[in-house]
Length: 285
Image (cartoon, rainbow, N blue to C red; front, side):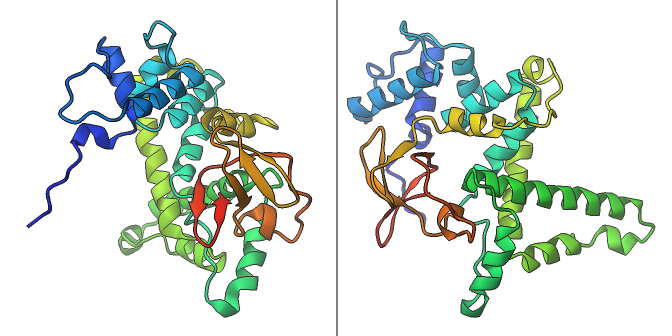
C-alpha cells in the first residue's frame, strides 16, 4: 500500500510557477482558499523572483516572459534563459544548456580508486576556463555530435540487426572518457522535450529567426547568467565565497574544474553557481 502524500499535487511545482499560473488568470495566490497555504514569506519570495526576472509587472500582471514561465512550467530561470535566447537566435543552445543543467552533478565519473588520475586527464580535454557549465557544454556538444553521426551511419546501413543495436560507439566513447552516458542521454531527452514544447507553444518566437546560430564569445555566459542571476557569489578570501542573496559562506566544490584542473588559475572574484551542497562542508557547485 502506498503512503499518502501530504503535499497537494499543485504545490509540488516551484511556487514561482504556481504564482505565475494564478496571476495569469487574475487570482491572488495569497488570498486563494488553499486547504493548507504555503507561508506568506514563501509566496513573497516567489513574487520577488518573478519581478527580478522581469516575468511580473508591479501591477501583478504577467509580462511576455511571465506567460512563457506559465506555459513551459520549468524553473523560471530556465524559462528566462530560453526566452531571451530565442530572441537572439540561440534557442538550440539554450535548450541544450537546460538539459545539461538537469544532470550537472552526474556527468563526470571518477572510476575506481586507481583510475582517478586517468579520469581527471580525460576530463581535462573538455575544460573551459569559464567554469563547470561551459565544460559540461563542451562534453555535451561532443557527445551529441557523435550520437548524430552514429545514428546517421546506422540509418545508412543495410544491416537490419545493426539498426536495432544500441549506439555502441557512443557508449564506448563515454566509458573511455569517464562520462556517464545515461546522464547525457537524460540531458538530450530534456532538451528535446523543451524544444518540442517551444515549437508547439511558442512557434512564433521559435520560428521568427533560425535558432541554430553558433554563440559568439561571451554569449553562453550571458545565457547562464540570465538563468542563474540570483545565484551570484563573491570571493571573500583565497578559497571561500559568500552568496549575494542569502549570505551563505561556502567553498567551490572540490570536484569543480576550477579547483580540480591541472591548469587551474586564481579563483575569480565573482562566480555564478548552480546549487549549494552540504556534505562534509558547504560547497557551491
